[in-house]
Length: 524
Image 1: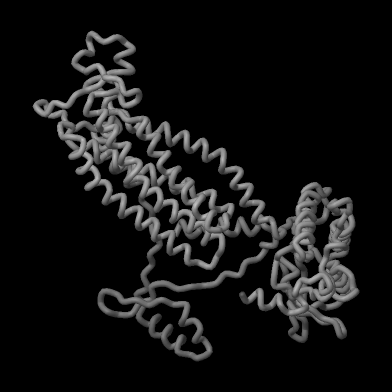
Image 2 (image 1 turned 60 degrees about the vertical axis):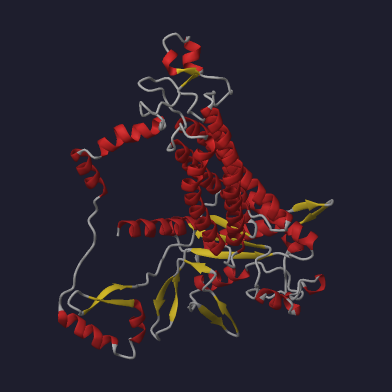
């Protein structure tokens, strides 16, 4: 809304006859914009003459050599740039001007500079800046490591914006193939970079989603396997591998329904939404295991209707609570004003809601059907009558492997039977974990020394309060968090401090700084 009100001003309205009213530094949109950072190699001073010449060559290359063909006409930067009056395209002339002044011994103040009647702001154009003081106390440039170059393109009408977008992509290809310069390194960002990277992530995730789906199918089928007592033969009456596949299909139905319904209602689709299926499938698989485990805990001697009633009274409540909290969590995220987050949360929340509905209708019906197969002693895969485990000695090898089953016998106490994976955790993993030696090893692995230094000097707090009471230092009060000790005395619990960063002119430096802070915070 605010941006729209600014764009209605004639200077930024975007009509063809007003493209000559663009003023550099006044842009409020990045609809069509290219940002290029030129970084001096080997920590050199970007203000020196040889670096200025390298940047000049790069700027001329971008303006003259990068062209796109559209409807039998070639467009270069001079055809697509925003400009002011008849002054031509902004050509980053300030790079040469500042470098010439610097190399001729002029003192250049920072971040604002003035030369005669002309001046400007350099704070957003230079990176890796080092300053020094003059005799009169002024702050001047000593050196810098990077120049920030910007190229604004026309973004109205639609066809012109499309051509500008083509030029952005063409520039990206040219810069990727730009001959290695001995003086500068280049990084760039344009208005479509984020969308391109998201699309690339989506294209990368698609084959991984297929692999993940196959692995989940295999894992679910393995976990649904039950064995004949005291053997390694599969109990095909109790095992339900096909039902596990339907559990994944159930989650997929929720995903497809949410996508179709929201798109039908005009909800835009963001590339980040391609992550949503992973979350919904994970929740759907979890709900499937809850329902299958609940039906296994019921007595096999009961009728199917009673077993389903007990199952739904147990599992459906847990599924309802988890699905509701998940959907509400994403509903809260949908309130945000960030479009990508809003779209992602809406799609995910609706998909989880539909997955729950299908879970207690579609999947519950299939569960009842497979429970009926179990009651009739049928093979859960093909529906044939299974050979009972008591006849294992006279069964052929194919019958033992593919068609062996069991019947409940309340007298022997085998009317409730668990999956093979449950027996593994009960009989092997839990005893292993509870072994004293293992517990000691686990404790050692997860033990970390914590930073905990207590300040017990009462005089320190007295001087601190006196210092904070000064009006001059009053802002420091907002950076301190106070608490109480067990004896009721006030103590300093935590404090906030600021760090000024240097040498973050390139994207790699910024990423390294981010990773470093994450590593430091994880160690505290």
